[in-house]
Image 1 (tube, rainbow, N blue to C red):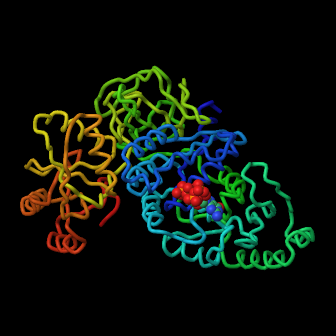
Image 2 (cartoon, protein in one colour; image 1 turned 90 degrees about the vertical axis):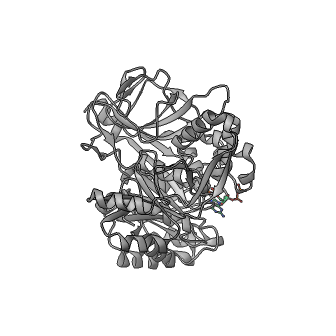
Length: 530
Ligand code: G4P
């Protein structure tokens, strides 16, 4: 067995996703505590872009800065290398989250037991389903009086269109929450509340029939036995294949804040979550065990220090070994590049690394050569798939308000949109520039950064569009005709692909009906139909 194979097999690269406030940050922090990645609770907290910060630009920038350092958090647990890819908590940055999901091998979805499935959970799950990403669910805040557990499970199946299978089961809830039964291993760990450190006292009871369970739980023991019997009757046995192909979500219960059920989640995650697997690319699929290196950029971050204009590109290694200072091939530019100080993110610190294996994320200093979606190889002309743009929800025309500084304006808008802060659309055959985002906060960030980083001034003018559809047709004449007919609504994206901007679902649907030869796609890679 080669070192590369062993290193790949011991990696688990994933993201934790949730509707804001469900407990993603708290869970991340607790997982890091288990891995010894951080010593103190509270260390991850600062990564959050809080609601109150929405109008405070400096605060946004500061917090974005902190999230550079925590874009990926790596630690070792019991011989496994855990790479957690951070996703921004604020919904206005969800585009960033969608892209991060292209770089993971699986996902842990956090649900608030009181609120159940919320709006953003549904959107995020759609993205996971699109790519068949294996998903595990952690139902958090069981220390609160939440919704009935069976009702929550039904809601998950219904709203997220996925089958669920509990692998742990809560013993009581709210004030009477006493621990979780591990259905996967058939044992119970009882907890003492209020512990914020890893060494929470756990009393292991190996068998449900053990009278010790009655002594510790009282009447809850009988109820637990009944519920366990019920679950085994209602739900199909856990199927690893169904989990791995994304059609079944194992469910865990706990309280991240109180460290209940987190160890069960982590240990089961390590045993069942997939190591890096094959990745679709053009013109061929790439296997992680291949000896030649390949990887792609899924995120770009501006350097916050205004004296250093370089950026940080985050590269996911897909095959082979990434080596420091080795010449790699930049597929889009068709040229060689070397990275003399690539870094990784172990235990709160950025460390310059000599090598990285499939599943790892490497931070690369970039002077503007790298774009989101770029592939690096050892010479082969391949491009990774599955890094699509999604339809923005808000569209505004960006107007240069200082014509003397047009150069700075063009450069700023181009670079910021390359970073993925927002999407840029140019009017087909015209001069209008439209910036599309998923939230209003982005416009504030862009105006602020245009002024402070590029010395340019701009203004945003609202447009009546609400969705973007990438258009194609097998009949070039039909496409051309549509573009001419709808010239006011057709723009070009960053790759010059034609995009139709619709005012409403109704207008969109009537165009779809009126132009049967034109296909309307919800993402730039045409995996999702309308
Ligand atoms: P997010 O990253 O998903 O947005 O959520 P975060 O972890 O920040 O948690 C949101 C709020 O929920 C926090 O409270 C956090 O303390 C609380 N929380 C997380 N897990 C649990 C849990 O298991 N039980 C209970 N009862 N609460 C939980 P906050 O008041 O917004 O922040 P803070 O003042 O506690 O920092």
